[in-house]
Image (cartoon, rainbow, N blue to C red):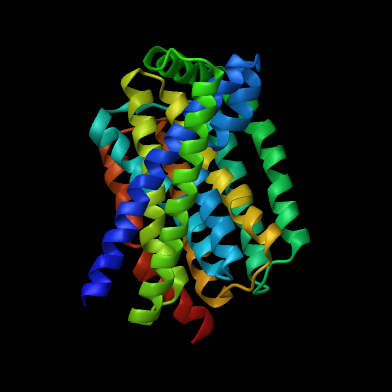
Length: 326
């Protein structure tokens, strides 16, 4: 029992370190890029767009390198669901009601739905090959171009705020930003490794598939950076920025985060476990997009509804599994 307790502590602690290390890595990398003369546009498309998904990306690479593809898919798909339901749902409860730009919201939402459908078509085979993974990663270019066209001004605002805040705190030179970026990435990589090893151990001790632990537990932890980033955005009344961050992060999770590990180390995956959760994630995503598209605002009632959708994810996925396979 002591070993299990210590493993849980390592898992929770590693998730916390991963979130903090990822933030350090991204902010200092962005500051370094700015000091080297890169434009806010380039920084926004690259570093900031994938910044809050560093945790899922590193988990993907490490889990697939160790031969555990289910952890990769579970963390990424689970993060999609957690961000669209729990994270999105908590925002109006914490920050109050805010308006939503219907057109941009639905455009970005359609990209997220398409990315989930792509995962479904690949995973149902029960394995990834490099062609599948590379196509999934390259699809991010298309989604990025579409979403960036409708959120460009907000993304540039985020870059400017990030750089201004970081440079005020650390008025150092390029070597300083480089050093802390390296420290951040090292911390994120080490904590990702510990997370994967913890999931493997707990899976074997409790005889629970690694996908289940990753989808319902690890994904919540790796989604926490989005919550803190978007609370800050809403407090500064950057409403569209917060929404773009959440859905944009989901798109990165559904493309780059899953694909990069599989491209380097193609893996078999547990299709029968994954398919029901993807179907439910698609269903929950549609509910979120339809609800907000009609109301054109996010309030506490919608927040409770979305959090409730996450609470129903386990029994609903189990029901879909029974219908499809039993």
